Length: 226
Length: 299
Image (cartoon, rainbow over all chains, first blue to last red; front, side, top):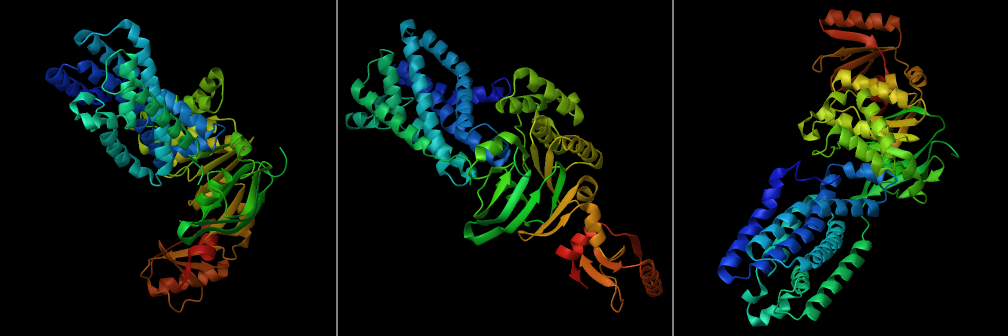
């Protein structure tokens, strides 16, 4: 029951406009637009699993629609996973647009596409686990939107996800891999064969650790019953 | 199925900050049909529904639905019930057909069954013509009917509806009543309402609740026999009813005087005419039992 961009076409534009403007700035300023586009793919994958899912669960809870699903044979985890998978399908269209821009502007090795897709899946999975954990922790579902906006700022816009790590001072470049979304972006870079300032082992270890942590935390959340 | 449709024993629910929503509720419903749970705002109606549909756990006491404990066997309960929550909204970007269809698919129904039952439910609730219009563009009453259609399309043994007809016009309300009566032929329909007319004309069994406790329970006919007053006379709120021998109750709509017999009614009318007061007369109903027992104040 995911909302497709056919039902809300403006969302397609709004989801992509800021990241693509940032890509243009990065490409014109540093020539490293491919890193920016990989970051955008990771960002939309992470966001669909975390912010979008948490917002959806919170909205259904405020609307009391969630109660109809709780009082049904559908298990809460099944509902959450199905919702997360539905949100995964939503990102296909913007991902295609970003890859097309990548192919037209900076070029992309077709052999790298499966690895890029795998990176997106990893980011979506980690984001979903994070989103379920965050939703479960917030007592007031009305605060989920403001929390999601803040986290979006802290995890997507501020750290070097859409802009290259190389823009940061040397001392901060390694440390930036400790931000989960940056670690996931660096993994995507390595898999796509794009050089990065952070060793692949470090970013892979950080991404794996965060994914495992968020998954463990999400599984401990009670999603529904008071 | 083993045991009664619903069994509640000493249910207590205390929310954080010490709010007591249920204070020792016990009852048993043995037969299918329509049960109307009535009470003022804050009486505990929604909390009782939440306990019975496994949305919240009781603080003390226990309850069973279709023989399954609502805490220990909550998954079994959830397989057999269907709920329309109070003040709920459908998913606004879905159409009524999508909403009903996908809700049933999420509950495990096959594609063909879901499509067939969705059509039937939408037709019964007068939504077939708007089946392809997104819910965001429907009126509040239609959105409410989308939720009712979603819940009632599901083949369930117990349907719980929390104030299902709030916001519906009289015609739509009667359409919903008809659907509920149809559902009650094979299942138990347990609904909450603060419309006494709805409880009286629709329910086979009425449960009155106030401040978390059951104050009356019985069929509408049995409960009406308990009302010793046969007639109610309604005066304007500012009317001077002092010195009148009949029972006087101050209620929201005005002053209500009750008469036990035709003789008493005649005397009462005579007195009111002498005082030049305007009034209306009708036979007592469940609303009067409710007012006298629960919310009225002696004048």
